[in-house]
Image (cartoon, rainbow, N blue to C red):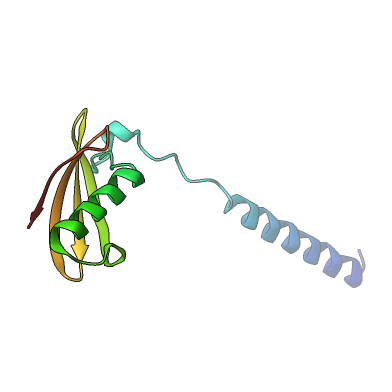
Length: 109
């Protein structure tokens, strides 16, 4: 075998080895564990329209501009009631609203 042929064979073998190494690194990660086994709890948030109703109610209660009151979090308390936490320029407010859109309470936190 000539020296040129030996060099070509060596380069091909190296290239194939490199390609196999690169392709073997493309193995996908195992799937995440099922939801019921994750450490985080699943919380249902209030629909956007109910959050906006709370922001409007908080603005009326405080006399503030409704565009300055932002919902920061929400959660479902029972099948028909949501609690929405609002921020009005640093003042925290809590609002309870039902699924029909009736604001039950607006209170400073």
